[in-house]
Image 1 (tube, rainbow, N blue to C red):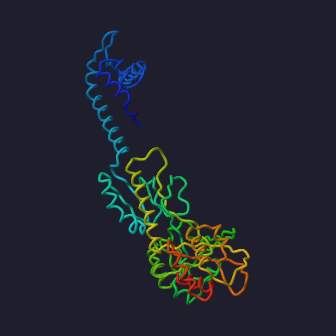
Image 2 (cartoon, rainbow, N blue to C red):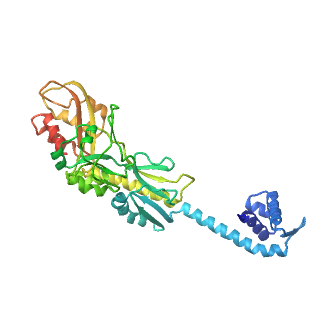
Image 3 (cartoon, one colour):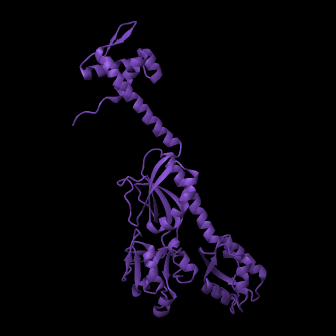
Amino acid sequence: MPKLPDLERLAIFAKVAELRSFARTADELKLSKATVSKAIARLEAKLGTRLINRTSRRLALTDAGRTLSARAAAVLAEGEAAESEALSQSENPRGLARLAAPMSFGVLYVAPLLPEFFRLYPEVSIDLHLSDAIIDVIGEGFDAALRIATLPDSSLVARRLCEMPLYLLGAPSYLAAHGRPKHPLQLSEHVCLSYSYQLTQDTWRFGKPSGETAHVRPQGPLRVNNGEAMLPSLIAGVGLGMLPEFIARKALASKELEILLPEWTLPPGAVYWVTPPGGPKPKRIDVLADFLSTHLSRKEKEAAARGLEFQVLRVAITPLTIPRARTTGQMDGLLKAVVEKDTQRILGCTILAAEAGEMIGTVQAVMVAKMPATALRDAVLSHPTMVEGFNALFAAL
């Protein structure tokens, strides 16, 4: 294999030829005079000809040196221009960003944000590749990728952009015909539809705060690599399935689908921005990551405000002596704690008024995020007992 040209020594020679001085060249390039002298000597040795005639007082180019100096100067100028352009792109947002994203998420959430991004950064262009396959970011030459997963590839640098819950879902028609599973292990008796974008699509993993776990291998007639392709079959009652929140959001809001086994947790999901490992990224990549992080988080909050995102808080209730009387103050205290997700205060609340004076069990305090506490309170207190009120609220949500 032929050796690469000695570009560094050519650049030093070009500077010496320009300044006609080893000392001035050393000063300008911030090198020692000895380093400059050795570079010229080694270049001459490699080329087999003298390039410079030098005495203690003056320096002159030989014929070979004059011939080479023009080309060496061009090499130096091109190198400086390339370095300057690269530096400019690293400091100012400009150039092409190659981004990979899941198909449905890219269409529904990334693409609508791009007009605003281009308005803010007109010198940046984006090559957006949409696929529900796991892209080889490094091997396929992408600057970054969006991943919806529990844990992204450890060989990549990952930045968490926003939460993305995963739900087990079923249609009312399926549940009416086949019953509602009470435990994850009962899913083996049900028709299950698989979403192959999940990193562990062959096994569904459930857990409880107590440490109890359950693993299920779903069986059913459909396996897809795009979550939206599963929705029609889920809504039609073909089977049960597991989907990320952003795909199921509208069907949940319209009550075409219901969340199942809410007392069990699924592996926590999130949207990750992943990039190849290495040094500093160009400015265009940094601003795109910041832009998506800001706007996707905002979308998450807006969805919550519209009542489309559900929060499930599981509250273990120790034996409590509960007064039969139901007061507005009791309900306000509980609901304020629920809205603020203050677990300690929830545990301290006397929140149920039942026919018995004590209750031991688990209360699933299900709420639509940011729904006014007074509306929740009124919905519960409109029933003869709080227990019936909470049950009605759970069913409505």
